[in-house]
Length: 393
Image (cartoon, rainbow, N blue to C red; front, side, top):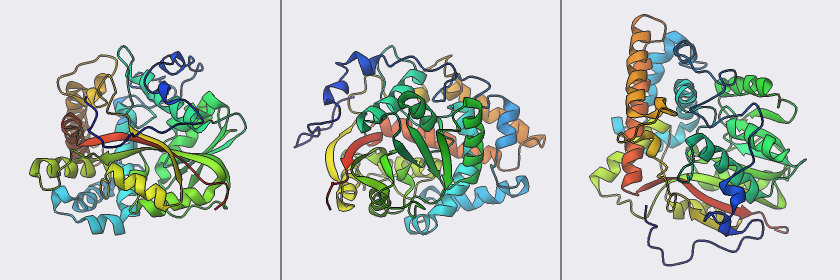
């Protein structure tokens, strides 16, 4: 993929870690330390004890905390929020808690079944497996933040905790996961117990627009493809700013539209709608909007870059119909088709709740939009920036 044409340098001098690490000139990031015996996530190839992997596990988790007989109506309500079905952005933003909770109750089992415990994409080197790239993506974030043993770290929008477990084991820091979805927290606590990290990793159920923490609590804060769910990025970043100690850093991978996106282009608009529908998003903001929101929240920008621009292996490759892989078979077009057929059968015989097939279908629509958006370079899931809270305000 070719870098976008920019009129200014996007990488700034970085006092914590040289930016040359991103370009691959350091073996430390290209070949991270081997993971501990019980890995935490990011895999299509996963320790069976650590993540649900069978058809019955998928069926039993469908709907999350929603009662099985209410899944279909939840799908109806969720779909109506989105532009793909005529929904309005204002309704998605004003009802973001309900929309996002419904999304993750409906989609989490599909994510874990197909993706593993870390629900995110990654910058990827040639010859690197998807699992390796996801772990390195998480390690890179920890290194950029300078996370060290004993530090108190916050993961904003932590999912079921794959990244927080990986970062805690990689850095020996204590990591708190903030999540407003009860089902994901229940699942994450069980995975923490199995991984043996319950002493250093925990979860707090709360809205990241209204965090239940005192000012200046954390030594570092990060978010991985999560704050894209916020109805107001400035408000979200201000909360992060408030709970972060002065002089410390916040790092984030954001889902964004790029400078190549044309709002009056019908194809571009359709792709954006598909991504929003299949990923529980109120809107997809531009890279410039996200960076300006961080500045408006009070942060000082250390450096920023769209990491998708120079990823040797395209980030969307696991979902690309032209690609086939046995190691991440469930993410391929064939694997996803088999999953949809299986879900349809499970729903038909009553083992999966009514509406499950529709969830599978809108997730498939999202996959199509993500691949098309990636190929057209109008969307990125890894706009990265590192910002600091000033020592004196």
